[in-house]
Image 1 (tube, rainbow, N blue to C red):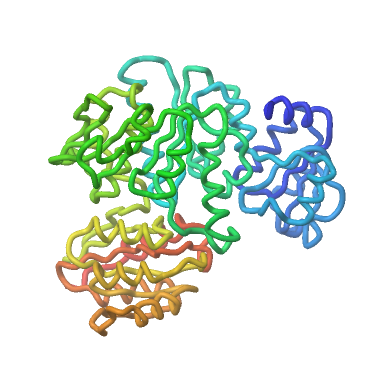
Image 2 (cartoon, rainbow, N blue to C red):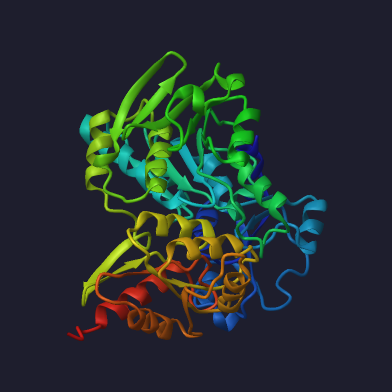
Length: 478
């Protein structure tokens, strides 16, 4: 229904692309190739858009600058994920008959591949990457001829490749709450790693954030939902789901401890006992993976493997799972070892953009690391981060827009006794230098900001690459 509605309107009416982000630029070419009449609305002034001349030469109408949302909209609106769908002009356009959709929703409607979608507040990039690598390794091992694609919130847009895909293929997509908010279709296999407060500078409240995330498992053609058994939000979504459910947790040891009795007619489970990950059913369990084989540190990464195994159960052999665990060193910017200098080890965790991610990173490292924190403000509470830093950090260097908020959370915490070393450095480069000065032989320094990067950087990758460049440029002081 969604597919036919969108395709009919694209071919017969006026199409608006709202925002020229990474995914919407190739979307414009995709639409033009199918005969669409395209208008692009972009907040930037025309002179700030490098592609402006080329777009107009292709027949695209540009509406730019402060009034980019004003005027008539046409039949189909493709929303960039970062633009709220309830802006008054968009609401009015939809009330007048426009169909609001997105590049990702169009991809879902058109691809013949099996789609495996991953969302969550933490761990989704690693879990998405693990699923992709498991399926790719299995396709190579078996010679099935299946191709495996990865995209969404990571990698390159997949829509331009949709006509290359076949029913044998798999598309593994990481999905943000921004992408999911207006989705009316779900992947065939959906994974939700967890849900904790995040992006509350953009979402109206936690309720809206949860509602956006839940679209990954609310619509056709979903057949399987993989959920964190110890997260109350994901467990409730699993309880209300009418498809097959697989629950995972590293905090329980048996099937009956993971799956509530009311779900045992349709639920499977992954759990950890005696250093072994088990796949459990009501009357049978299968050992799947030894924790000793997992190269990535931390309990959170054991759970990332559990989620990936659950999503690919029946598609990948045990040998493929073990081989990947023994060889996969992690996603760039996630607990990424940079170098050892003067007896101090430096790790890049720039992807840690929430307090729960920083908690997971610190719990995975030995001792009490020196942690560089701070960035742009997503309006989340820093009380949990203060608890984590007091428990697990040997020192803290605060930087960026949220530095004073994090410091206030530390000083106001009931356990604050003045023993944790704190430095403040507004500039990021100065913060990295301060962390080096604080460290002594045997210490670990980690960039784990617990915040987004947009106060000083375009994205977390630029922040992480800047950190690595600074650290790698140092010469030994010994």
